[in-house]
Image 1: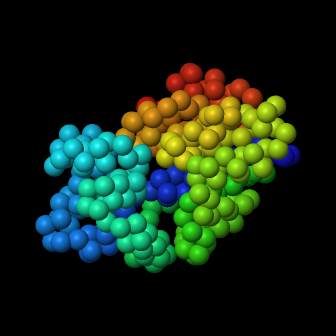
Image 2: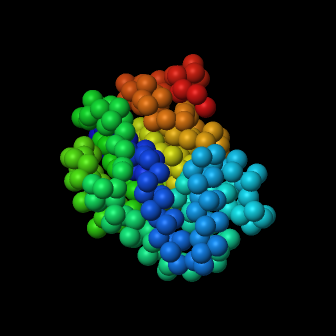
Length: 256
């Protein structure tokens, strides 16, 4: 590997906004009885407003556990559907596929995180920027085209099967550096288990977008918004071996 490697997540990182999650939940709700659909959508809204703290207002212990343990809003919808309402896996998968297709349409409100994309453009050339997402390639590539950012990345890995897929990618891309210079990789994302943990466990840098202040585990830096992590990305690019960590310790990672 010649250049340091920057791994970038998509949902909640490159783009944000809850309209796609609401669409996903609505398609699942379409398969439920009216009363269950109403309760399911209400629980989803509570999570979107308060994150895991929404468990305090849950209707029962199963719903509370589903909300409390979910690492992001997509996971909350899936967990609520499967654990609280016994929605079959294929039905959930179909709702997700329909959501990804809907996101291609400009009518679906998707916010591109402009400051992050500007920073990636500035860093391009000094680091290899790889978009790594669990979303399927067939819907991801048209969405990137819609947003005008397909060319913003040196490589795009869709259907990545994170977290294990990210572990394999880091092993492949780093090669011998995996053991000797793991700090030459950095991962930024909003899902701790998928985006952050695989980097932390090998000693790479990790910038955690912690929307709800979960603090799920160690990271080089964490903040509620991607914008607050941009100085850390720049510091890591300038000195992968140490500047990002010193920046984080100095409090430059933004509100935690």
